[in-house]
Image (cartoon, rainbow, N blue to C red; front, side):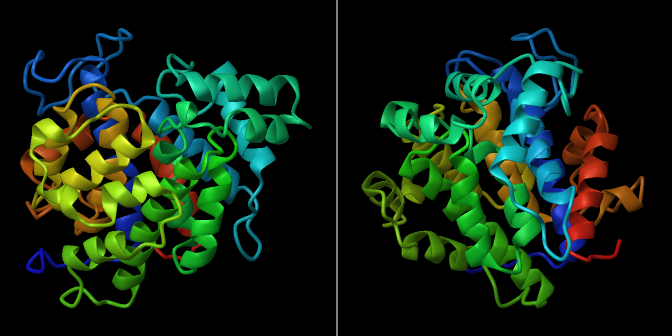
Length: 344
C-alpha cells in the first residue's frame, strides 16, 4: 500500500469527484440490492433497477439523504457552516414525504430505522431527539443509515478534523444514536478530512494508502466491536467470502474499507463492492465517497472528453455520463465549494 500514493489534484476537484462517486456507486449497486451474492449476473455497467422499476443510472436514498445533509450545512454559513440537527431532520422528512432531492421526485425506499425515526421527527419534533436517543440506542438498530449520508460533513469541515468528527457523531443521532453508528461516522470522516488536508498541502508523494490504514488502526475506538473488527488492520487480508455486505453498520464500513484498501483503482474497487450483493448500493456509496476523494485527479465537469487517468477510465466515464440528475449534484457541489472558499 505504500506504493499507492495520493493522486495529485485540487481540493475542489476531489470534493466534486467524491460526491459524484457516491452517487455513481449508489446507482451502480442499486440493481444488486437485496440480491444474494453469486446469484446475479456480474455488474460493471449502470443497469435498470428491477427492485423499484427505475431507469438506468438512478441513485437511491443514500445519495438523497447525503444531499439533504449537504443542503442543511450550506444554507447559511457565515463564517462557517451552521450545524443544526433539527434542520437536518426537517430536510430528511421533506425527502421522505415529498421527494425533495430525490432522483425521481419521490421517496421510493428507506431503511426501517430511518423511516421510524423520521416519523417521530414528523410527529413530535420537539421531543424527537430525546425519544430516539432513548429508544434507538440499541445494537439491533445499528444500521448504516447515518454512515451512508455523512460524506458532506468532512467535505464541508475538512480543515478542522476534530470539529468534523464531532459533527459526524452528532449527525448520526438524528436517526442512529448508538455509539457504534456514531463512531463509524467519525472514523470515515477522519479519513476523508485527512485526504483533503493532504491535497491542500500538496503532500501527494508523501502520502499513501498505508497512511490511511495506519489511521484506521490507530483510531481511538470506544466501541469494542468496531475495535475488534478494524483496529488490527487484518480485515484487509480477509477473502471475499468472509466480507459481509449487510446493512449492519460494522459490516458496511468494513466492506467499504476492504474494497478500498485491496484494490488499486476506483473502477476496480467499485466493481468489486457492488458485486458483493445484499446492501450493495449503500456499501458501494460508502466506498464511493472515500475512493472518489482519494483517486480524483481530473475534473470531468470541465472537459467533456477528459484524458484517461487513474480515475477516469472508459468505464467510469460511462457511469458518469449515465447518471440521472447530475445537475442536482452539481448544485450541491457548488454549495460545498462555496462554504470552503474554494475557487473552481
